[in-house]
Image (tube, rainbow, N blue to C red; front, side, top):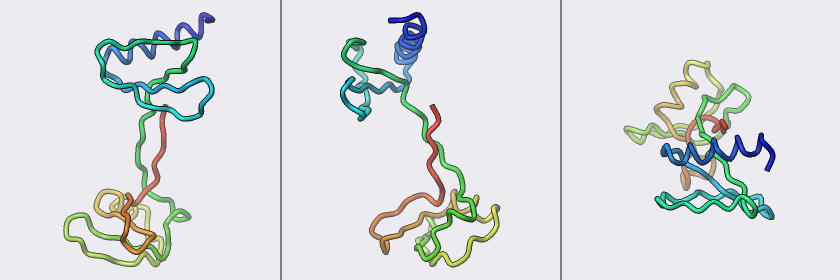
Length: 119
């Protein structure tokens, strides 16, 4: 391990000790999995890669991202509407807090915004 790799490994282990979520993957896989909350974590840096789990945040849609024709429903009163125009950025920010949208006729509902992963 290089000094930089050791620093990164130490940051992951200290993060885990401080209660942060950690993920791992095999050197031969692209799929990251969550490390459990076991109090006796075993680290195998020769067979696995580890990282602090990236945080996911939501931001409002830009006007180009609004899914025109999708159904949108209010989270509190279940009132449904069809999205037919982009509206203002203030309205789109309100949608993020108060509404969900569906592009499959109401079978699944998602936030009215874009998920961004922050390391």
